[in-house]
Image 1: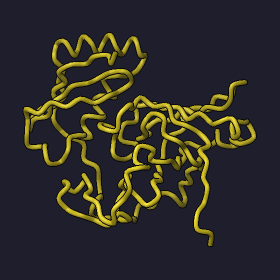
Image 2: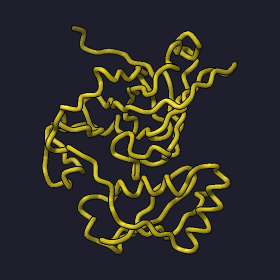
Image 3: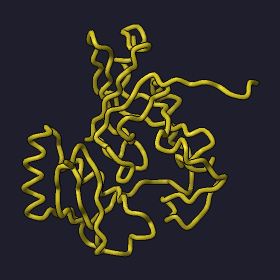
Image 4: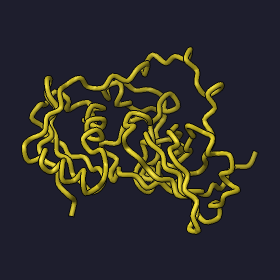
Amino acid sequence: MQDTYTLQPIAVVKSPYKEKFGIPRQPGLADTVVSTITLLPNYSSEESIRGLQDCSHIWLIFIFSECVDKGWKPTVRPPRLGGNKRLGVFSTRSPFRPNPIGLSSVKLLEIHTTECGVELTVSGADLLDGTPILDIKPYLPYSDSLPEATFPFAETITPLAQTLLFSDNALSALQTEAQRLQQPLKSQISELLKCDPRPAYKKNDPDKAYGIRLHDLNIRFRITDTHIYVDTIEQVR
C-alpha cells in the first residue's frame, strides 16, 4: 500500500450557504434549499454523466475545505450530544478528521448540459458554497437504505417545535427578498432555524441573538422556549 494518494476535485458546489454557521448538520434537513454542482472542465461531458438522469438521489463525496488546515484529534465533542461528551472521531461525522472527507446524499432535481459544461441541480445539500466535490455516485436504495441500522447517539432528528415569528420589518424584507431571489425564502428560513444552529452551551440564553448567512442575506434571530423570532433580514453589502 502506498503512503499517499493524490485526489483532484471533479466539481464544485454553488450553494446559498456562505458561512459554516447555520448549515444543517446533516443532508436532507432543508429540502427547499437548492444547490448547483458544476463539473470541472476535465470531467464535464455528457459521457461522464450518462445514465445519471435516472437517479432520484446521488451521493456527493467532498472535502471539508474550511477544515483542511485545522488538524484533527482522536476525540471530538459532537454538537448532537450537547458538546459535553467526547466520542472517537471515527464515531462521529465531525469535519475535523485525519482526511477531511465528507459524504452527503442529496436529491437530484435536474441535469443541465450546455456548451459550457454540465451542471447538476440538487436539493437538501448541507454544503458550504465553494465546496470541492471529489466524486459523484448513484444512491442505490436496495443497498444504501438500511432501516434496521441503529446508532443510539443519533437515532432521530427532532426539529424544534417552537412557533416561528417574524418582526414587521423582517416580514416586509422577507416578501421583498423572496421575490428578488425567486426562492421559497420563508420555508428555507423555517427549515434552517428549526434545525437549531445555536451552540449547545448557549441554548439556555433566550436573549442571545444570532445571525446566519443565506444567499446574500444576513438573518438575525433568537430562540426561546416558545418561539423562534426572526428580528431582521438584510442584504449583505
